[in-house]
Image (cartoon, rainbow, N blue to C red; front, side, top):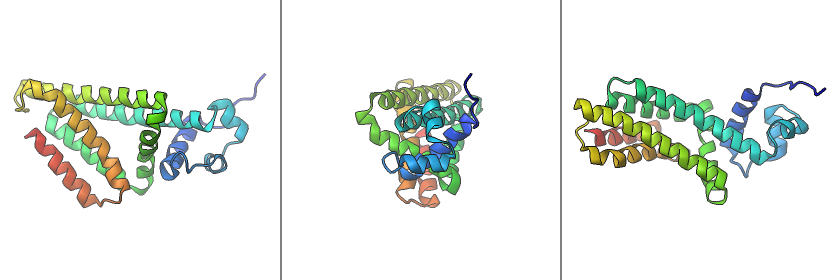
Length: 194
């Protein structure tokens, strides 16, 4: 009979997200990872597999949580513009929070690995398509109520633009941009909805 796990797997994934976010995939040694996660080497291998497997699990966990929150926000908003603005402002709030921002930086490591890793590349592409579809559905609702003045043919491109603008905020923050710069980018981005 196997021994029961003595740790919370979701808690370990959250810690892994932060460790990979701070140090990047390449900069995270196995020793550092085990120390920060507070688990034994064999527990890591038994539960998650290799360091790479843990990274992929942590990335998927992080992205799915953020995507679900974005979907909920955009689907429940009464005003498309307000929903998009809230989503972008929450991105800025997270990126300016010392604790939460490190988690966002796991995405930078994923983008670096995507060209050489089909699983990560396909996951990112699938998630980007999902978020574009969510933006598109919100914009279409706004178009049908008259809130969004763009033609229906423009909405797919506008959806893609909003999604990639959202993603670019992480790179911009990691590059050292201030809150004022990020808020300014949000203001300019929202103008495409006018």
